[in-house]
Length: 318
Image (tube, rainbow, N blue to C red; front, side, top):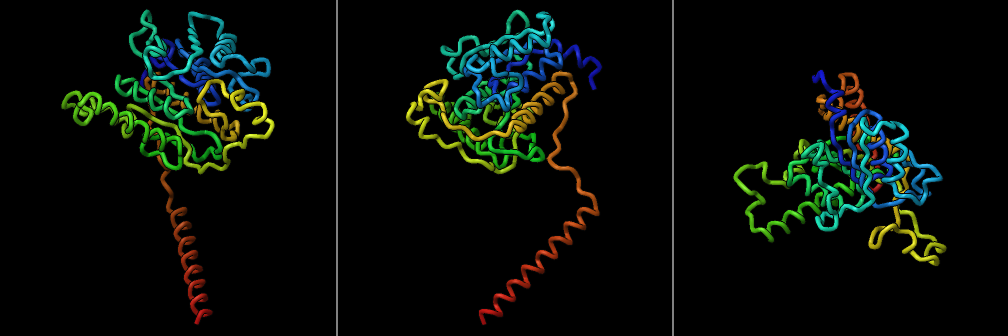
């Protein structure tokens, strides 16, 4: 265990991309916990529908950029600009250096490399581009998968990207990363995606390696479908409901607690790593003997009932 955890947290530099229900809670807790430099990236504005899950936004903030709103509220928590440097960026990450500019560049006067990148993006291509960018450069990423349409906090897990189950966003991101890798190989002609014989140069290995990319996801099946577009919205014009062209308009209904829980989970993992006290996520707690016996008896009784039901059906047919 590190004895200088707090100084390490205070001197750390974290990039948070995506400041909605998940990312706003993560950035909020990082700031409250003493992280010294936080760059917050999001192109979107606070909407009325997002007030049930955003960490700090109020009714007065509707229509304002999420990055600016978050920076304003966090500054009220810590007025000392030397203790907490806030760097809001009202821009969409695209993966295109010309369009992104210096967005991904760490503050050179303070550090040469990000200590952590937090991915709280909910758009598949953008999310995959960010993960690929960091994986190629060996930048540690903690990423959040889908929080919409889910409600059970006991189904939240931390794992590598491949292990995520029952999460459509994780599946789509894996597919997109493979597509980006194959496209890159065609363009560069590098065999197996390796720049050398070292396996660490194979950036697509981030899918299986949680030391490169760790994810927070929910194994709960989505319990709500996309919200239907109303006749009134159709008459008004769908283009009026998106902050940017070609971005999705309909969204999954969100229980406000889930983005907060997943955002706080991202923050907990980030703070422990930054402070030199990382933890290893537990897939499942060990089941005691009494619980195992009870489960065994339950399954035996269930099998007997099924067997009796089948015998009864066969008898009736004869």
